[in-house]
Image: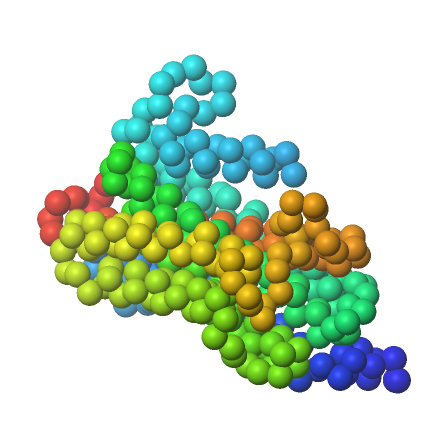
Length: 56
Length: 269
């Protein structure tokens, strides 16, 4: 118990370390999702002959 | 690993219109610059890039947070290095790719060069923003301030605005060839900022610490810290490669869509 609380406490720097890692992971994930969805959407429209299909 | 290298080599060669390994012929731009070939290759490579980026990223985070020792001066706060420094390296590397692609677009009019540069910009902007934000989260406990106007921080902030300016330029100019031209010029002029960022800690008296890894006398860091840092850097590179494939495919499709709507291309092709 003490051991894990020591880990999450990060030697007193928890308030800086966890946000740094959290923001990194969130920002990268959001960028990946946005890029992937954009690519899928445009490729589908092209495959449908230039008309936006109803299911996207 | 060898497979990954081979596929990377194939991608690189097809991307720049070079003959593939074992093919004895002159570079054939028209043939190898074909966006269809690129899309086919990108579709195959993307999962490899993404899966290895995630695996290495997880390994790097676990090593950085749990296995690597705390710094003797900065304690656990220095663990921010494992997300800060790779983001900062990538912010410069991606800009370098953008600048080189812009030069290639100018000189050889390679059809994918503008696509690569345009697709890179938002990725570079995110890496730069992450370098700045994680840097602030490191600066506050170490320097007592979220932000100081020293040469390193200021030049990286300028880099961030260069990315934003580049993105805005593309969307602000209606006509694609004119937008491409303006964007290339901005990317090339802004490249001056890259050596300024790199050497800012040597040229000026900065609060930001000097180079620790890329030094003339080798990395001033024990292997227990250097290993997770380099693993994270590799993960970020693979992530960039994967994201670049996805965004370039999207951009190629956008261009095709534009020409279909202008009636220049038949939807079937």
